Image 1: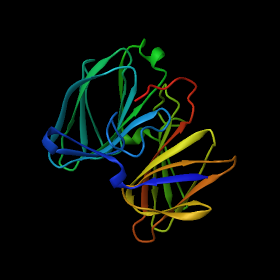
Image 2: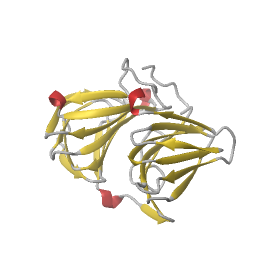
Image 3: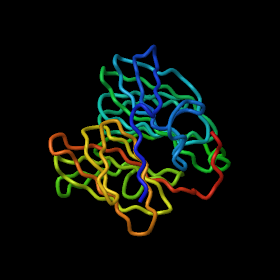
Image 4: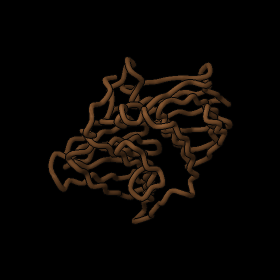
Length: 254
C-alpha cells in the first residue's frame, strides 16, 4: 500500500470576498502551488471557513460536476436556472454544469464551514446535457455506527448523490481511541482530509495523521485494507473520496 501525506503547508490557499472566506486547497486551481495537481477525475478540492458573513458572486461553470458539502453553518446557493436555496450542517448542493450555468454562493453565518469539490466526467458527453442543480439535507444521507465510528455515505453506493463521474465520498467520524477500516482497490485512489482531531493510518506501520493533513492512498495489491486509528483524546473526523486511477476517458490537462 502506498500512502502519501501532505501537510497544510504543502496545500494551496485561497480567499474570497476580501478575505472573509478563507480556504485550504488540497487540490488547487490550475497554476497554483500545491503538492497534488489532481487525483484521477477529482481535480479541485477546497475546504473553507467564513470569518464573517461572505459572498462569492455569480460566475460560470461548464461540463464538470460541483459538490458543495457543508460541515457547519448555513450556505446559500443561487443560479441562472432560477434556484435560490440554503443548506445547513451536513447537507450538500450539487451542480452538474452541463452546457453551462452561472451560480453564486453566500455563507450566511459567521463560522460557516464547507467544502467545494470538482469532479471531471467525460466532458465531451456532459457538455451536451442541460445544467442541473440538486440539494440534499443531512437527513437524506445514510449513516452507520459500528465499534465507535460513524460512516456517512455522501456520494455513490447507497448515497442519494449519484454523479456522472465515477466517485464515492464518505464522512467518517471516529470516537477517541476507535479504529476504522476501508478496503482499497489497486485500480482506485482514496483521497482524504483530516478535518477534526488526529490519529494514524496503517500500511504495515502506523503513520501519524494531523489536523488538516491531506492523504492519498492506493493499494499495491489486491485485498489491502486501510486502517485509521483515532487519537485517544481527540478522536478523528475524515472526509474521504474514492475515484478510479483511469476513468476510461481522457482527462483535461490542467
